[in-house]
Length: 486
Picture 1 (spheres, rainbow, N blue to C red):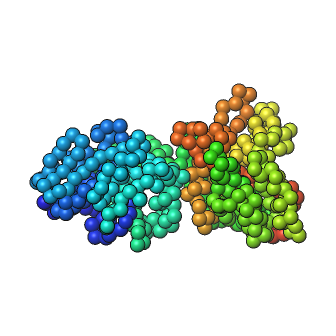
Picture 2 (cartoon, rainbow, N blue to C red):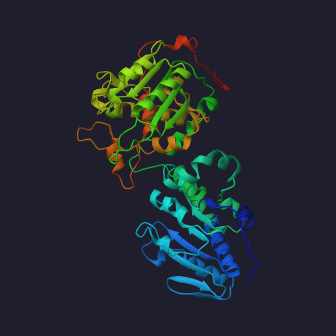
Picture 3 (cartoon, rainbow, N blue to C red):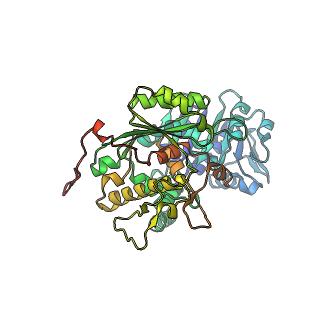
């Protein structure tokens, strides 16, 4: 067999033994071709049997069968027999091809196989993922996956990217005793062809930042049709207070979105947001416990952050938490506020106008603009994020009280981005701004999970009910200088 040639970043595929070997990245990274070549070599030399899977495979044409056949021919590998539905060789090696979604038991027929390769792994379902691991039991067996990640809320991302996001962003890989996860993109591929370079440059000029980064750099595609907040806007808000030079001043607002009971009787994760002035300093979620245990968790953090305002969603399961929360926060100088997103907008007769120049002849009031409080405060969040995007990208001065910054210290930033950038607007016959509710979002194709972090952030947009800024600092006077904002 000819010598195996891989991009340098992928050489660990053949030098390290791990249960999971994951390659994530965008177009032109050579990830699929490199894995195919490694599998062909191991099949020819070791007689390795390899199961090749995709979540969705209607026919053999949807599999990596054609890629393996092409690479066997290109590398002039001898001893292989290629049939319509499988490939085998004289050393005892074999490739089988299966779809997981239509036949979840397909893996069980692969006794003696020591490697599974899941291509397009970003589409794998939670059920398929849970079935994959216990099925492959052979000694020294490995599960290889190649993927261009979709949403950070997908099962693949939840299992193999989000827990290791800091290391992947910093080092371009993550490794422990069980995992080897490598980020590989076109710039890591020394064999990247000129024809793809021309296509890449065209896309960079013509696609949105989010689309380009997803296709070519393997970034999350955290968007849905009708989303009210683009990924580019969100990204501009990360550490915007440091970029623009404004300080976190004012009231500390802690908001909590309790669990929602699902059709199966299980509870969704609960969300928590901590906003100090115009800076969101923490976002958390809690996946275990019932609604009361999660309320205790939220009020604990209200104490830890010395909250001036504690607000929670009292639609649904949160309706019965008033006494528990009041008792937990007794003795604190804190405003306690029950938020009901389904109610009519706050300050209904006040003029809503997101721009600095108010044309009163055409201006609409809040009740003429928004269907309910949920729409009102998501739109206020949208306005802040957009203002921040303009301030960061165009260097346009904006009052910091109209901006929002997300501290990079937030551990679940990717999940927050996924949720915030997947909030769809809903058509309203009266021309009012309306946001899909959680039940409607779960019915989308593909479904959008309950946005408990985003809802917690949205609730923090409601102004506090009394002047609390003096508890932290005197009012900060913003001045614009040549060096920036002070």
